[in-house]
Length: 149
Image (cartoon, rainbow, N blue to C red; front, side, top):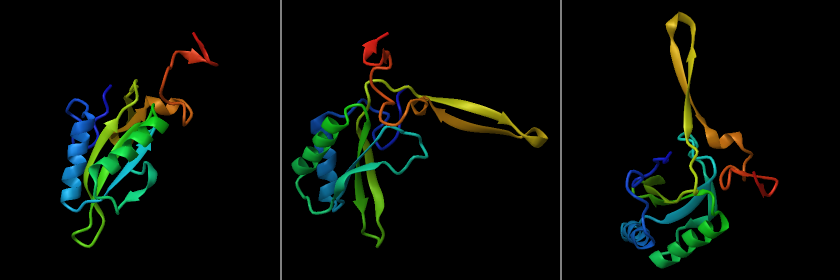
């Protein structure tokens, strides 16, 4: 299942040159960028792990791209995204957010149905990834204790 979060999530994965172009667009508009990663892409999980500090002082897209590459190298089986912040209205808001890396395998979500009183039906989303402990939710799921099953 392909997770669709962020501005370009319905498009094919962006190339590095396309990512650099989007970073340049953000910087040209005065939107500083940051890089974040997670192994739990649940739609309500808006607080991902931040890679370093926000890049408020960088004006060169190549420098931001270096941070993206470093985060990808450190977390090859995680989701990685770039955020661009707009503070023009006196508050910090996200003007642009897009994925720059996905795990090789995306296990997806299950929709759980619960019937309540007075015929009310409620739904919740269960991410299959959270069935594994944090830090080992992605990667080769057919390995056990370092050996292939």
